[in-house]
Length: 154
View 1: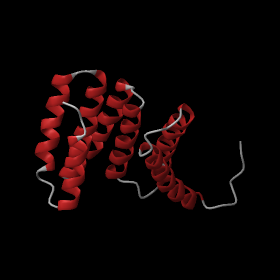
View 2: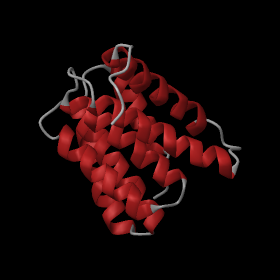
View 3: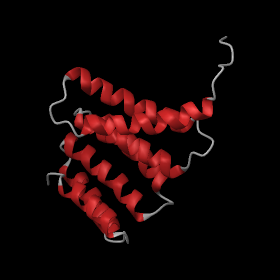
View 4: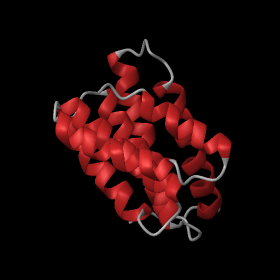
């Protein structure tokens, strides 16, 4: 069994939870990813969520966001079942939270169903997401979620 490290694990988890999340976004935003970059995108998203899971200050919102990001990555990779699985986890953690995060969980579910070709389920989730997005009070947040919902092909 390895010896206890001579560095502060809490600092490591704080650093990598955020750093890997942000690196994943760099890959998500790159429309010209290589297959190797697709793999790294998935690895950084998973690593971010794992580091969040090790933090003492983790909240259901953090789990919702981390699972949402992994769902988005799987959607980009065309893996509907995995995208759905992580979207469902995102919804589970978001359900007691603010409309913004619940709307994003439904956005992820809609995106997963879009990838799967299940247009009726996609439409059902989109309607829920749009209804929740309308309840978002912060206008900037509302514009962000509405923009992402608008990118899902009906």
